[in-house]
Length: 495
Image (cartoon, rainbow, N blue to C red; front, side):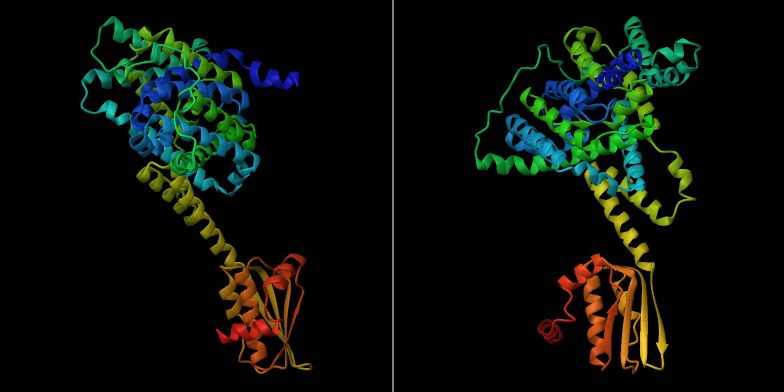
């Protein structure tokens, strides 16, 4: 127990503290921007980011992952806030948390195994594009100073790690933010700053119970939004956990993460914050800045609040160009450049799944739609591929006038038609044996195909015997098959 606590909290103190500070600085403009997207006061996003990061540090299932207010969640809140106001958003946030805790206890985190690598790659690439596109408003219709500062920021981020000793100790994004802020203040450069994004809160968050009537009507209003927020939040969190697992070569507890996200969102709603989830961009900043354990996530949340409440007069001076440079670095680091090279090497179906996931996410700005499209396409391609791996061969025994059909492979909705077409129903034989020793029946479509084959042979006057059904296939055939149930056969033939 003690060793686990040390590993989770104290195994990388310097790296975690520095990475947490960088993440906190990068969280502020994003939290404000996402609040504006959702149509609420900037303090709602900032309180949410503080609360979610602190809570998830203790109860989350993936050390080193950053959770806070996110753009994907903010987009789903717009209509609710516009039509019903902030109090209903807080109520929806609480319900979102409850749904996510329920998902954790139902072990829905395990569903991530159905998301193929090509969907994850498409999701990551789409997010990289969205992160970059989100920076474009800061780079359009601006003075040359902004471009110069952004270029200088990128230069610092990529070149500072080459400096001997110091370059490996201090995270370059932090150096970028601090140095560009000093330059902007010393030379009094007229450039957009964090202070221009919106007013920062000047008090600690307080306990708030949403001021909404506790009745069925309220539930009907917030339930559709809460379901959407819960699904998108868990999807983005599970995807981020997968990516951080890969980056750190460690494993995480997905179901604990589902529950943790739920607890964090309940905490956020009770402190006047909006719903949030894991952030791929910030998590990558954390990992690339040296963060590895729960301490980095806790530091990010606590330092965010300290920055906002104590260092606000310095904080408002940070040029947006410095943060744009950091987010462009995140965008470049997030994008899977190998996936472009792999387009030539990977199968066409894999490439289509990846590209469709990217297109749908970028077009709709909804990560859930993109992942759903990718998973459905991957499932269809898989079903089609497996459907081809079914073969029916036959041999004829003249002595007994028996035709034996040997079925090899998987029989289900995709291969059932091929299964039926493999039999010669017009052949005049006394006996037909269908050997299913090396076959497996998966669904009622496959059972229906077997019924059809048996009934057609019997209609032509042949005796039909089915042999070799394995236990699982026999169970589904016995339950849903009709070829040995005369009443059901008559009913089937009537149709």
